[in-house]
Length: 301
Image (cartoon, rainbow, N blue to C red; front, side, top):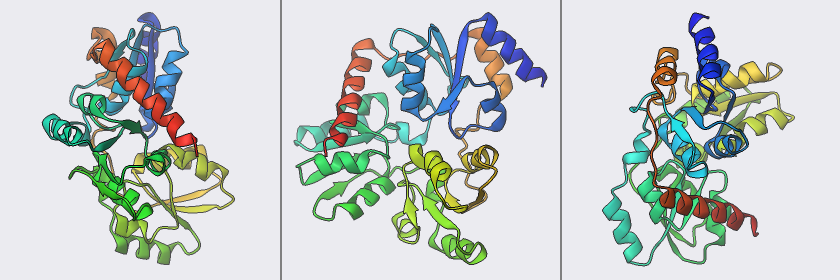
């Protein structure tokens, strides 16, 4: 409680808004003014009269918040909070792909340089809509190979290429886990995300974009779910929706990046105003334009 009280006092005296990723730890959610996916955070921050914002989550969350709020100071509590996918793709490799006339669709986890080269930038929730709208037959989906394979499964007439990057907690799932949990929790719906390996997706009852997972569980008539996603999100769903029963597909599917920041890290960040995200404003504006056009593009159909 001491640290939480200290953070509440500091953020008030320093006039700092705190936002966090949806699957943050319970203690981080307690001190957050808002939690959500990267685009939700970015748009929430836009509406608030704060010049300094602390983003608790993987660095790509802070990057997207900065893209939509280039004139605000965006902080992250630890500089090591970088999703491996954010730094996985070589810039020159993507530049060569673009030079050959290929279409590049990037997820929000892609690094700033990669997003600036992309034709489309979307969340996994939107990716099928966007790819459906693209006339090109060969499309690079970056950086997650499992999302690319999921897209390929949905568009067999297209050639979907990717890189070897993947989400650590979502890639840990194996087909036998689905069989075991279905046998143990008969009648429970198996829900996974596009970041899951395709052989697991094939055994699941439903594939839902990360951003829509909470909304789906909340609105569904079903009462029991086996969820193939990061355990902190499942724990949050259990707290927020106590009337439903949620079982993790694998109990040790933790994201080491999301849970890296401690309350002590947040105190230090507030006291010392570290660590600031810096993106050139012209780059931020370009990426924002691509994101907004991609969001609209996916809605045309």
